[in-house]
Every structure is written in structure tokens, then in C-alpha cells.
Length: 544
Image (cartoon, rainbow, N blue to C red; front, side):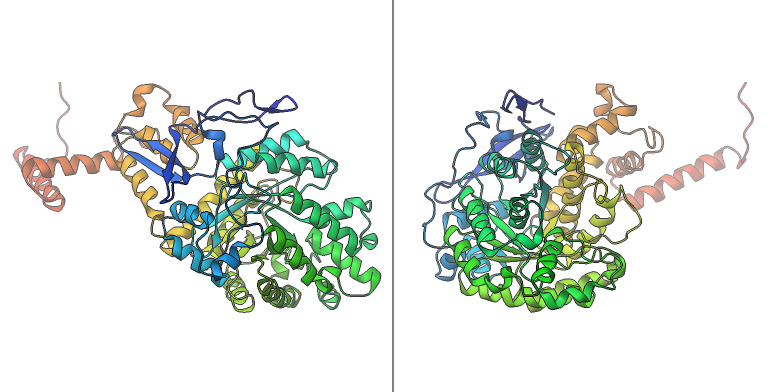
């Protein structure tokens, strides 16, 4: 792994340089746009290209200066007066759609049609030209979001910028800045100017900070101004908890864990304090006009999501989902792109129902879910409990998964936790892509399996999601360089490696002009004759 260079925020370095065994390459579109890929060099002379989210940070030729920000790749690409949804409906393929088509391995027309139908969104604001276009939709690769952001207790601007670089290095397709501490605006500005992927936020957090953390003091005007502030900075998509209605709050009273969404609890508190419907709901059309003018995507929040297995699929959760369906159609009528956020904590037998109901109520808007956690019994391992649910819900059609780190429910994740969360969720997303039959998903599995069978250890490491860790685990017991070509690992040793034995069988078969089955039978016949020639004795005398 490459070390951090002198690129820094106030003197704190960010990670740059290629991932082990690979280099940045670019695939051209028909009009000459350059689409980034990570090109993995194989020891057999071939190479393998994979989807790349890391931006210029892994390009050896890039000059990284976080004080100046990234090059504005998309400046001037699209009109200032239309959204990607509006262009798509009018039959126009935008540069963003052309770019995405090469990334996803589909036609530009397919991208356009999916966006026009509302089944997919392209969450790239006109004010964030540094972001490389990507798409979220059930008929595309499953995407992964990484949550970042400081809290009132810990973290800094420097740490959050490095977490963003680190998360995208390992495959985060988007990031969300969920800062709730000091310097929220400054933290977001640094992240946006240096982020190669779309950035999402929850504006109610900053609005609450402006009224010293007292929900009842929130107003539509203050919230509106916060939305505009964030749109002007370049936020690409925003979580808006407009489905938390006054009449739904009592439905959570008997829950085991009540309302666990921060945004949901803030708006519930406001509704109860004023005893009227949320201004997010009553002023939703005005919100639509603001987001449309910047081409910012709605991520309609699940403020009443279940926070425990006991509360999964209850009336409060699904009542809010019904309202989100209503708001989805209003947003689309305004030309605004929409995706829907989902749970949460859901046992595996109840997961499919969530996807089916979301698609029915919300017109197949892309579903974006946190996990869900399939069990509540494993604090410190909730990246695993949630990845189980995430793979299952993505298999049924969820388009983007919000990662969970080992620190979930326990504390603010650090840099290592971010990597663990991203890699865990890339596994879940890829598993779902395989199950859904995405046309290119299995290519990487096949390439790695072939390298494994041929004992090309270096290629195994480099084709994996995390080459550094794969190599480190192998080298714990077999660190010598010749072990990188050995036909065994420390699990089975040289005598019991099933793949080496299989290769011996195949070699014998090829040498004798036999199929593998015939080779086994021939070998058994030879051993039988050898046994008979020795007198048919089971125990032979000890050699002198």
C-alpha cells in the first residue's frame, strides 16, 4: 500500500497512490470523456479492470492539493436550468449518462430510460463539478455509501477529509457528511471540494445546531436557508424526514426502541411541541423547487425506521413509507430525482416485504437501506449482522446500501473502522450483483478463482477487495518471497492441498490421454496391481 504524501489539510496528510498491484487507467466514451478504472496487472501478462471510485487520489500522475480541491471535471457539462430527470424524460442523453454507461457496461440509452422512469437517479449536483457521475438503481451495480462526520465529542475537519479519501479508496460510491459537532459548514466545504463521489447530508442536523439543539425552536425559514446554504456548497443528495407526521408519532409509543432516527426524533419533537404537521411535509413543494434549481436529489428519510428486531415492519414504519410514496410522486412532478431510505433492523424473513412494499408505494424509486441488521445480539460485530441483511435486501432490489462499521451503536468510527465497513459492504453488494445476474459481476470471481487454482498468489491478493490484508494474512505464516509461487498455503501444507492434488490428477490424465475420471480409475488399477505384486499384505515388514 502506498504511504500518504504531502497532500494535507492544515498539515494532516491524506492517502494517495495506487492500491497494491494496480494503476489508474481510463476508458474513453464515444465523445472522448475519460472514465476511470482500476487496472490490475496480472502475473500471466494479462490485466483486469475494475470499477473505481477513488478519484485522482490513486493516479500516480495526479497533483493532489486539498487546499485547491479537485479539478472540476463536470463544469459546463449540463444546462443550469434542467435536471437529469427532465433531460431523460425528453429523450436526451447527457454527458453524465454517457459517462455512466461506460462505467456500468450498458448502453447510454438504457441509462437514460432508467432515469426517465424514476427507477434510477444520478445524484450529482451542478454545484459539485468535482464529482464523477454515478448511478443508483436496481438494474445497475449495487452501490455502497459510507457515513462520515464529526460529533460534539470527537473528530476534526482533517480526520473527516482523510476518512472520505480512505472510504472512496476502498470502494465507497457515495459518502454522507453527518457532522453534528462544531465547524459543520467548514467540514462539509473541505469534503465537497475534495470528493470524487457524490456527497449527501441531513440538513436538519445543521439547522438544529443553529438553534442550540432545541427542536421546538426550528422554523421553516431557518431550515429553508440551511437547505439553500448546502445546495450552494454542492451537496448532491439530501435526507429529508418529511414523512414523519404528527399522527404517526403515537404509533411508536409501544416500541421496544422508540424512534431511533436522529432526524425522525427531531421532527417528532417539533410536531409534538407545536401540535401541527411538520413544515417538511407542509412546505414540501417549496423544497422541491429549491432542489430542482440545483439538481439535488431527494433521499426521503425513514425517520420511523425500526431500531430493533422487535419493531421491524410495524405500523409506524409502513405508515411513514406510505407518505414517502405520496411525496415521491410530488417530487417527480417537479422534475426532482428521488430515492427512498429504508430500515434498519429487520429479521431475514421480513426483508423481502420491505422491498416489495417500497417499490409498490414509491413507484420503484431506488431503495437505499441501512443494512438491515438481521439480529440485535452482536455489538462490535454489527458490520457483519447488517451485511447479512444487506446482501439479502439488495438481492431483492435495493439499489444502495449504507454501510455499518464495527463501532455501530458504540462510538464514532475511526479510519480503520471506515475501511472495515466499506469492504464488508462491498462484499454484500457484490454478492447481490451475482445473485441478480449482473452481466459483469462474475468476471472478477472467475479471474480470482483461476488465479487461486493456478497458485498465482500475487494475483489472488491483487484481485481481492483488500489486497493489503490478503497479502498480510498469507505472509503471517509464509513470508518468504518463494512462497508467492508455492503450490500450497499454511492451511493444508504441501501434502494435503486439494488444488495441487487436482492438478496432479489432471496432469496424469493429460500424460496418459485420459479424462480425469479415467485417470482416477487407471491410478486405482495401478495401485491394485502394486498391492497384488507385494503379496496382498496390508502390513509390510519394516525396512532394515
